[in-house]
Length: 341
Image 1 (cartoon, rainbow, N blue to C red):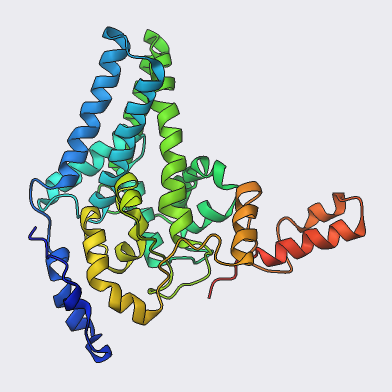
Image 2: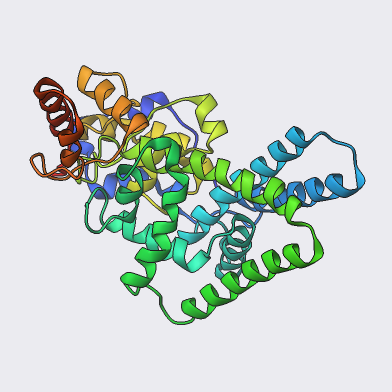
């Protein structure tokens, strides 16, 4: 892909230039398909190479366990970006290679590519909708530090909404059968310690990382459904590298075909438009007292009600010893309620 260079002067334009056609042309270089050998391909190959290296070192080397766990975590973290871009057909210009990368990343992560794809596209169609956004449930139904296990809800959502198409149910069956075969072989041939240490453990860590930086932080406070405000940007060169562009998550929601490695330059190009639309461009955790209260609540409890006076947590007030504490508890639930608009 030909990457457009960012020119500060090019962003200084009159407000009447904010037409869809104007910005479509402005972002055209980022919206076109990526090159065959793009950074996502190297992430895919690099993730598998790291996975093989960790297993090799487990049996043949003498590297310490913390280092092996760290390498396994990095391998899975890299594949998390691959499966995401692949579900948007932004991992490779060839659709068959794009699909192969998606399935390959899913297998290493212990995911199912059809489930991830269909559920994630539902998220894009219904951002912050309490009933129809599966990631909204993941982010608002428990403490942030327990966000990883809630990703299993995606599988339930996939089947309850019957989201599969064509051969995707068969693909799901094959990938889940492969997962069961690996676990069964580990139990029979005695390598479950490898699975626990170099797969399940790192996968749990990646689940927490993706949950926080991919689902929770970009969409909080989970109120807006307007396409210009239902996700946020928090610019940072360091975060851009560590979480592979997800700190520019709003750019992804607005233009899903842009690959992760071009979120940052695309954001710099589109910043005047986002400024004009009032798009959130900070992390938004400590901007106000309400932000801080909600963030602390999410860390400790995190179960958000969607009706201020009918919280799931309201019955716990009966367990508190004094009327004053009961009132404070109910007040806290009302302050942290999520009523998207």
